[in-house]
Amino acid sequence: LPAGGVDRRAPRVPKVWYGMLPQLPEARPLAEYRTMKRGGVDSVRFAIPWDQVERAPGVYDFSLPDRIINNVARAGLEPFPVLNATPSFYGVNCTPTVDCFRSLPVQNAQQKAAWRRFVQVIVNRYGPRGRYWATHRGVPRRPVRMIQAWNEVNFSFFTEPRSPTLYAQLVKITNAAAGRGVKVILSGLFAHPIRRSQGPEATTFLHRFYRVRGIKKHFEGTALHPYADDAAELRPDIRGIRRVMRRHGDARTPFYLTEIGWGSASGPARDTTFEKGPRGQVREL
Image 1 (cartoon, rainbow, N blue to C red):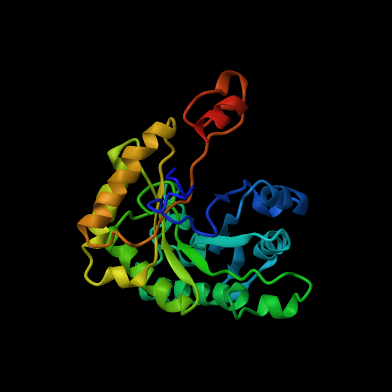
Image 2: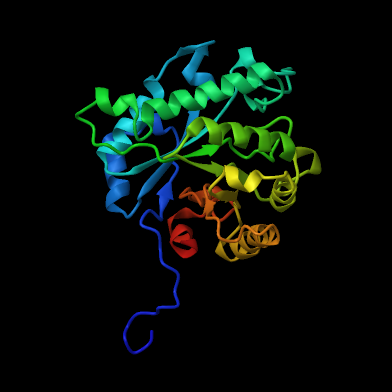
């Protein structure tokens, strides 16, 4: 550090910086969320699956997101939901090999209208002016201030079809439905699908997405799911996304890693891409 003890050239770290994505977040007790908070976690990312909330057309069941929001807020954490998973009654081209939940909901007018309503319903319940906070006065106000529009939109496991132009339509609808006070973050892109048939590389998809006229004004963050073998491998993936953003004049837009994980499993599974064991976790972090 310089003589004054502060490196004024260093970038300012955002107030909310480090987050977690718990497995089965609705089943985690409040004590676990409080442990996250004590450990320095600021934000919790979790899915609000459309197909588990809208049980029939226009019939909504909020029991699952209510449980998560309750614990996240009580622990003093910021909620960061990702919205995806199309209900079967809105699906398009569903087959035994193409599950309805993957159907990107902009392929006909009915899907577009239903997705718009779903985003509005979630924001109207959990957003800054959400009804949830008025009816749950014992819960500290931690409204949803940003949502992620879909998950791994370039990867066949979550999305069909994997189309940058169709995804741009979804982002525009999401942004309009969310309104002011709620930021829209792009889907976390899976860095490297194993096979070409599974979808394009994250950088390829993002470049094609940016080519949609006027799209930059409809979102406030890009995101990546690198799942690298080790921390050193993160650098080229992150730099690749930033290069695409700079190429399209969007270098100042925030960039997030919304999924990354090196699990604590030990034994034969240890020190793989996904499992490092506790010592490996410490090393990579």
